[in-house]
Length: 492
Image (tube, rainbow, N blue to C red):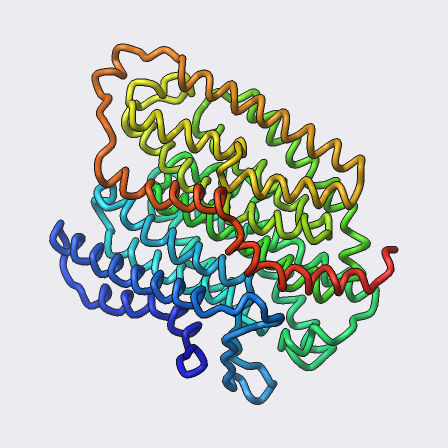
């Protein structure tokens, strides 16, 4: 049935239909803002349904890409509009399609001005992100990444007041530093192989020196998107003043382009360079994880706690990916999905905490019973207790690291134990911390909107933790293809 319909093009460009209708609205005021919210919401819900339809029709037993779509785009130089998915990209598409309506619903009452602009930017970003995960042409992928950077840039500046120009300048520098190496690598690949078709390039060999330079060129934009050190300041400043939808899109969705880029392009296309750089990548990400853990221990502010928890998790995900083992890569992908849902829950709780209590220390969280229960559950999900998605991802990463190196295993296991200790300390403050009198006055229970936003996130975290087999079955053939190609090469 999916062969008769361009479902990947539909799920990619359907949000732009909502943009078109939102752009037709005129005027200002609450009525127009409400109309824009409904238009955006009723555009993202069908997008989510189409993404679930793709999952239902995905054949987990087949190797290679499915639901291929191909059309001539720039015929003079042989660049194609080519889309396709495997298990990795399919789940990232579903993750994006799920979190976008959650972002809209989470900001339903908090955004009072520029609602039209915010909804347009959010929908354009959803299209660019889904397109990035579907693209099977490197040039098309680069175009979607560039398209994603534009609404991200607008989101950063839209909610800044005193430091708007400073935020624009910093984020613009990050974008240019990210895109120049990416475009340079794409042009080099086209110049040397006269094609940017990923299906063809997977069967083409690059020289050792070319692989080293191309791997480095892709490394810069992908690490920038993942916001790992020293690129974490790109997100650090965003947590201070941006609204919740921007934080979720920037922290929980756009960061996945980096993980996906390594798995889709860097590792399969440059296997010699991957084997060469893997030990350095492991060492680099271990240092990042240690840095985030130290800051996590020192800082008592809840916002900083959320930020560096997410950075630490991204570091552990990268360790799993560059263990270059089947368990490690599968665990890294699974932890990537878990990171999106748990991270979104943390950010939403952070905003609820900040808006309700107007305070920073973690020990002031008590006083809202329902919020306390949800916050404790999310903290347990971050720790990775059995029954949550993080437990499955972390366990798979550890199993992958065991196959790679005993020394790396000891380091990663120590990091997990220290993270567990740190989060248990926060857990203790949440349960037994003091509540100040002036904060008790502004304390109220969670609204139906808050519960409606958090419920699907909690549901996915529980589903992935209790019954992960549908996810692993869909990922198995894609991960096996990556590891089998690496096993055919000697490790230098």
